[in-house]
Length: 279
Image (cartoon, rainbow, N blue to C red; front, side, top):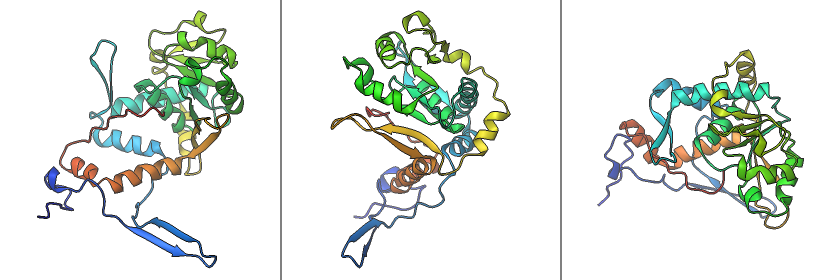
């Protein structure tokens, strides 16, 4: 019995979880066989910020991000709140000297604040460079972190709680840079001479014309993120991720997972649990 349906408004159990397989192949004159997906991704957004703004306009009151607070309660953020905070944090990062050649370095793990700062940086053309927490908290010589810091030359550093990261930041020469920390964690004495800035204060920054100008200047080739290899065979190497790459990835997920469109059409926003160790 065939219970699948291509109708996005069909009952959940009738909607296929994955798109139908489609493969293209090409034999080149040199004998090489090139395989590719036959799925059409459709239009690719210019940048992730366009998606953020579109969703904030479409359903600004819908929950976008949620995480467990230390109390055990859920901390939630709507699409509208996220866009407002992203624009404020984008202005704050520009004010601190970050830009296309001076990235934002993120040392602590996944969190709502981590996500907001990443989106804020990418919103105005500042590359976001997340770093494995292990390089700061499990290393003795901090060689990998020092290599990353030297190659990225960041303008701003983010850590949720600066205290456990203080030795690593000093070893990597990051303790003199402006430091964005989680709410209530602005303890400059735990790190060094750099200014420790509470993220809750920065989200009150008034975004100015510089934010809109930088956002409008983005295109598919703008560097969005620098992801570092694991360093398992040597020191980590930075891999540039452009806006087009990240937007294409999102388009691919939407195309290959039909249940996303089905859930949205039925008024059931999909719930995605991010458990992955990579930022």
